[in-house]
Length: 360
Image (cartoon, rainbow, N blue to C red; front, side, top):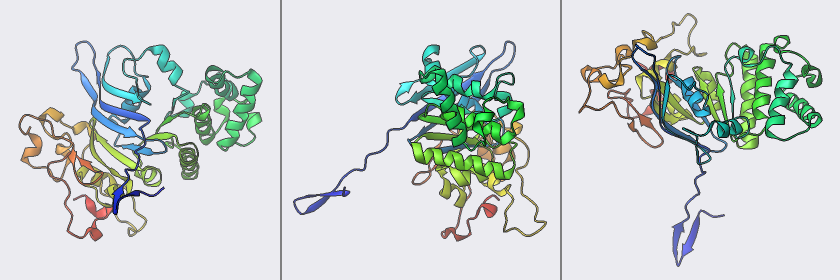
């Protein structure tokens, strides 16, 4: 259909329909508290959406709030000592404060998660086949025979050789790559609308990593599943994600399309992450440029920019509040948002704005 219709002799643009998001996260906050200790806000006002067939990345160092965000979305955080506020909507249905029974029905069917460590995520005392068929029996109302046949098909789909024999094996009898594939098979068993992958390639060798990422890419293309990829590996982001949200100290500090983010990172933290990645075009012996300090060096957002103690661009106003407000996430061009008072600047021509030279 044409994107324009004629009204008399004047062409009138026809609006292109915007896909309804599968996942809508709005102002999500997670606070951990223990008696006699100061409360810790692990996630602080996170907002993003994921459309059907879109892959969104949550990127940052360990301790930035990525995994806690995913657990809050799935409703898997403990009930005691944790406060969850904000809104999480799956296909328009609110999940924060939802009934436990409803969340159990949604997990595995409409939304699924691939956890970081497959060896600890799988039950070591139960055969792989039983663990895969359990999901099918619970959510797809199959007979045991049909569930077993479907489990074989799923294991074959994710590239596990001789899937019929693997059904009888225990997790410790499978390699790391096979265990991760088995987890993905379980997650895909009910064709979920939303899939969250939390560091799915951690501890896998490079060739297996590439196979797992290709498998996830095919899933998104073939089924239109919305994928949230949680990772600290910018190589994973470059090869898989459409949009990227960079997190630091519980907040999103930069949002951009993947290509734009890699070409022109604006937040000094994002630039530092990119500068820390080894480059094939660097000369032999070229030292990496790490971000100084650690994520523990962050200051509270109520006192300024949490990244300021580690930032080479920091100035006096980064360590103080402005008008009594936390550093806001602001518009920074089409499709971009930025939380920074002194971002990385580029010359008029962006030709020299490479990842290696972005962070100063």
